[in-house]
Amino acid sequence: MEALESGTAADVLGLAAAERAERLAALRHQRTLLRDLRDRLDSVARLAASLGRATGWRSPAQGRYAERRDDLLRDLSRAERQLDIALAAVEQAITTTTEED
Amino acid sequence: MSGEPPQGDALIVSGGGTTMVATDQILADAAIMQAVSAEAGEWHEQLLRIRLAEPTPAPTWHGDSAGLEVMQLARLIDVIGEQSRVLSAALQRAAEEYGEAERRVEFLARISAAGLASALGYLAPFLALLAVPSLTAGAVAWFLASLATGSGFGFGETSGRLARWIDENPRMLTNPVVVAAVRALVSAGDDAAAGAFRIPPGLSLALGDDAAGIFGVTTTAAGLVAVARTTGALRETAVGARRVGTGPRSPPPAGVADLARRIPSSARAGPQIRIERYGDASRRAWVVYVGGTADWSLVPGGDPWDMTSNAAAIAEQSAGSYRAVVEAMHEAGVQPADPVIGVGHSQGGLIMAQVAGSDEFNTVGLATFGAPAGQVVIPDAVPVIATEHADDLVPALGGARQDNTGDAGRHVVVTREAFSDTEPPAGEALPAHNMSAYRETARLIDASPEPRLREFRAELEATLGAEPGQTTLWRASRLPAG
Image 1 (cartoon, rainbow over the protein chains, first blue to last red):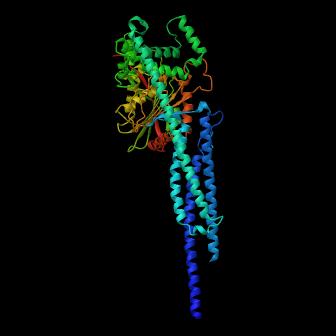
Image 2: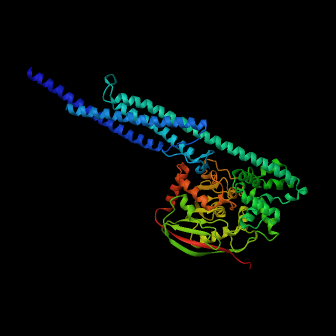
Image 3: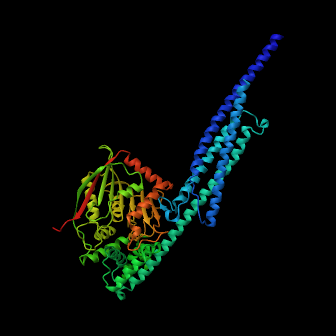
């Protein structure tokens, strides 16, 4: 009976370790994908930074374009921040999972 | 963030396989927006892969779960993709409409000028002034020659007063409206001739530059040359070119500004042609620079860079300066298959455009500055940057530009008003035509983010490589008859 119990505990422990390893692998893969996306977003944000900025007098149409262009630049910045938060969350999950070992 | 340039620094870009016409910044913005939109689609797919890799099931997500952030990010990227797509489309539409409006205005100006010219030509027997069909272009050319030489117009005190008035009102000739009017009038010279022969205006238009291309600026100029030759003016002669110097090995031109800087000045007695050779014997590439008109007199002297060559070149006859450039290229060792980049100011640009249009050499790129080369037919596949100041009269003397809005077209016209926010200097007949003004525009072209202008610079580097090349300088002269 004792042997059976100890076998079950070992099995459970082994299963948990396997799950953690699998989870860790998934998290690391997710981190790689997120970093790749971050790099691509960065390079587009740099490109978008060269969009023309009007100074002085502008026609109403130019004004509307400038507003929407600024909205786009803001959204790109937000996406970068959001991606940083997602990356930090994945990093934290990796740390927690590693510590559980 | 780059600031939008002040108005005087704005470049208007047209042609190059599109009907769009806009400032280089607008066209660059449209390209960037398109790139952002395309990237956003790919980010979406990447996010899908990230979500599939999520090890935690959604019901267990809490406030700082990566899964939640990724979901929100997906929504934001959708918005970015849609915003950039809409903005790119709006910019392209604006550029299309700008181009359409410009073409309509040019066409209307052309029709109006053609109608007027035709009517005047019809009345030619009663209007001695218009008895010569090519008077329009001829009058403008004569007028410019008189201004350049300071010889007046040959009509005594009246012309002297006119010259003084123009001197005191430099805006008169350095004016985009005047330039557009001259371009329309020059293009309508053939319609005056058609009117004189009782050809209806509609038919003359159908035969002209805008349609069949049977009549046009070329025929007008040919008429002018034929008439002028009866008076001893504009008579072509034999020419000869000889090497007058070898420059130090110089690095390849890095951009349009370098090309502009290396064009020989049109000073008398100096070299008119500069030829640079790059690469080794197995893979040679050449840059040929040709200067502008040096001698503005109507009767040929010793320098083939004169009004005789100008008129012959516009008439698509064998201009002395053209023959001199071809001779210098052969003497320098340019082989028919070697890649050649042609560069020229004013008459030099016209000559190099004609070299590009001929099959004698393998022109793979062309940069002209203030060249009256609008009517020269150059293969669509040859990348061209034609820089023309909107307030420079000289390019207008070449008439309306050949249409290059087809898919394969790679001829880009860059326009800038050289004196939009400053007064033209007094005492200079055509300051917007000066190479110093074009050098400034060339610098702006190099700084421009417009994709086709950047591509031209990249092709320059790809053709010439990075190693220094050998420079030779050439001087051509008209040879005495016999």
